[in-house]
Length: 119
Image (cartoon, rainbow, N blue to C red; front, side, top):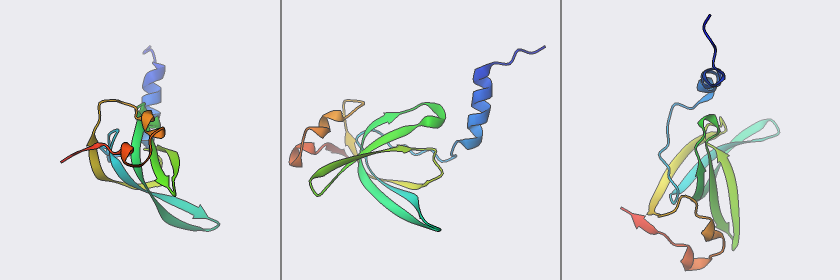
């Protein structure tokens, strides 16, 4: 009898739900996400633009934390990259960073939050 490994079973199940397109967005990139929002019976696309401050890469549960500042208030949202609600991800600008998590941007405001751009 062949011994069944639990990790192999999990990988097979997860492969059914993985998205085929891999977005190469990294920490420090400014991105524009389009997500589907359901309001009653209607669905619409809503865009959200911000900087990626953290990224977690674990199989089906790949997530990013996107931070944007609206009217002087910092807003952070977690997005699951393999979610069917995410329609598209567009990379607006890439930045050079030396850290994997940019949580220090939470304490900064204005021009201090700028990062060096990669061309």
